[in-house]
Amino acid sequence: MGYNIASVKWQGEEAAPASASAGEVIFGGHLGARYWLAEKIGIFGELGYGVGLLNLGVAFKL
Image 1 (tube, rainbow, N blue to C red):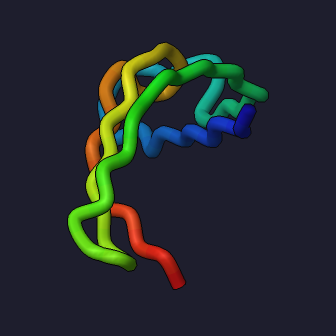
Image 2 (spheres, rainbow, N blue to C red; image 1 turned 180 degrees about the vertical axis):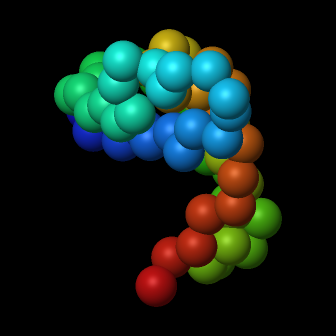
C-alpha cells in the first residue's frame, strides 16, 4: 500500500488541463525471492502489480 503523488507544470499556449496535480492511495502485491551473496549483501527480484511489474535490487543487512 502506498500513496502516489503526481503534479504537472503546464507550458503551452492552449488552456491548462483541468487538474494540475493528483494523488491517490495505491495497492499492489508482489512475490519475490532474495539470495544472499554474503552475510550482509544480497540481491532480490519481485514480480507483481502496482507501481512496478518487475523490481530488481540489492539488499543489505544492517
